Length: 210
Image 1 (cartoon, rainbow, N blue to C red):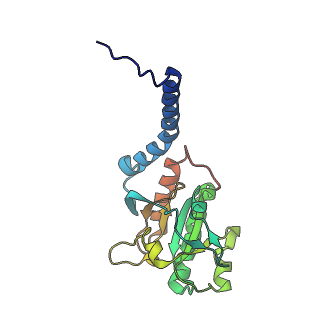
Image 2: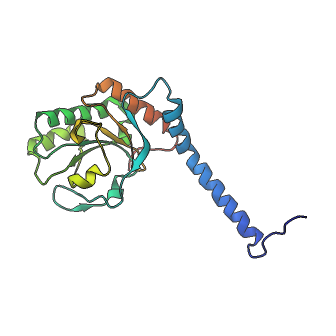
Image 3: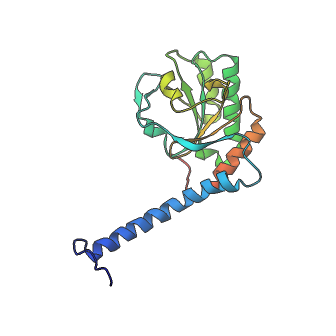
């Protein structure tokens, strides 16, 4: 005995739902494929940095502010790969060195560098020295400098055991998902290879510019 179609759902509506699901599946396929490639297939060997699985979403209510104290929506960070550091405003020698490596890593990506934004997250109320801000903006690409409360930041990004938040580079994908953490004091060439793999695997669905 065959079941009859539900008379409350017109055939046209059922067809429309299936078409919508098909469109969503087609749109999501490149993203799923790129992450499968990076996390499971792992071309050319495993990652140098630590893959974060499952990935951690950028909290929509993360309280961010620029150096002038203006609120910045967390969602404004979406749409671009982020190479983020967490350093105090005072920024001593170790901080300056990390910001320099951050700038060099982006430049090493060549033509793909336009797909990556540099982000400096400051977990305090201090003001960076003008010379430090000038240095991070060399080569015409400024770093996005944002304040965020330490406790709220620590609920999103986490260091490796025994390390501090300031010891690492954090890679966030264009959908706002933290998915890779560099070792403390990383070898730039080895970590750049991770970035190359990510950008190559995501080339089908990510485009330059936010």
